[in-house]
Image 1 (cartoon, one colour):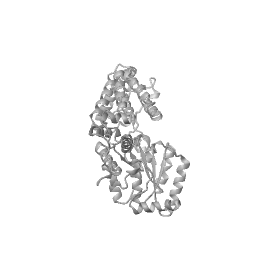
Image 2 (cartoon, helix red, strand yellow; image 1 turned 90 degrees about the vertical axis):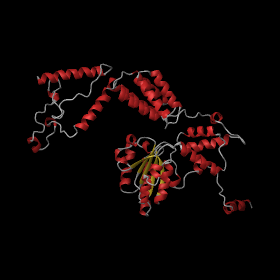
Image 3 (cartoon, one colour; image 1 turned 180 degrees about the vertical axis):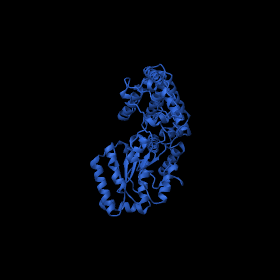
Image 4 (cartoon, one colour; image 1 turned 45 degrees about the horizontal axis):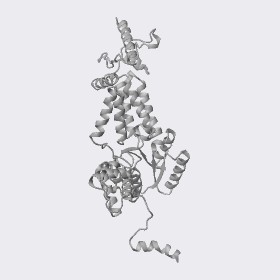
Length: 443
């Protein structure tokens, strides 16, 4: 009898128009079933969006989906497979190796022989090394798979040029407050109850989500679990119940730009204490540590440059250390880099020199280099004087020929003017020495 009841139950639920559903996370319940239900990515999924246009033609090329967590990359990949009638295959670069890839590729080839294509979704694609990334190239080229990779890292830095040349990069944006509100409204509709929050607490919960749709729905679940009957949380009580602080500022608003500006100027002003304070404020507010690491690298090249060549090395090492250690251990590496760049000798000579060179390049971009420094691989070019008169610097006693390298119509220019600070003091001595040699040779 019990067995008959077990068998009959699904039918009874279906007859009643109900689904018998094991408990599922709210984010899974609300996973969009169509591309139109995806929130926050109208620039690629709206009427004139890149993906919309692609799907209008019923064709899909390989893609790299780049954006923060919780913005819909995995969901969109699944829905693209449905929309183009491709078999959906998912792997994670964190857990997969060459042997796993070979199995996936072999299965895709067998599938293609039956007339079914494969959309291969690779999560965390930037985690694959160069050899693993190269293994995708043949199966992308021959159509065995349509690759859709997801990454939170800048593809320009993390993916091979060969892979990028065969895929289109689509940028996913963090969800804005209106998008998060839309998710909360959908959650309330599916749960059949309102979030037990006053207006201020609801705004705080939106900020806590920090543009991450999955995090927003997880937070909503936590609120419902924590609330007693007829209890409504205020902003302070909400933070106590969830044991987390609301971000101090909205990363898309003025607070973000004000604090990163303060950090940069404190470094430029050689004040490590103030720089550490603003770094700590931004980390405490939930700023992306890798964004901060990139800004420190920028400080190293813009405000220190060759006054201390180690600054760029240390800033890059801090970025790699954070990427390896994660939070919170990796935050100390960022702090160490900030102290280093703040206390390093300062110079913007390289920054100014590059700007001046770019302006000159735009003004004189059509001029040919002087013929004596051009190669002459053919007889005709040698007869035209290419390479004639060139002096090999290593053959001179000082290792310096003093020749002119600028286009003749342009004449010599000075872009780089290093100050008497830090390592650039030594560079200044070299430049002055070479200037004397150049003048002596022309005398």
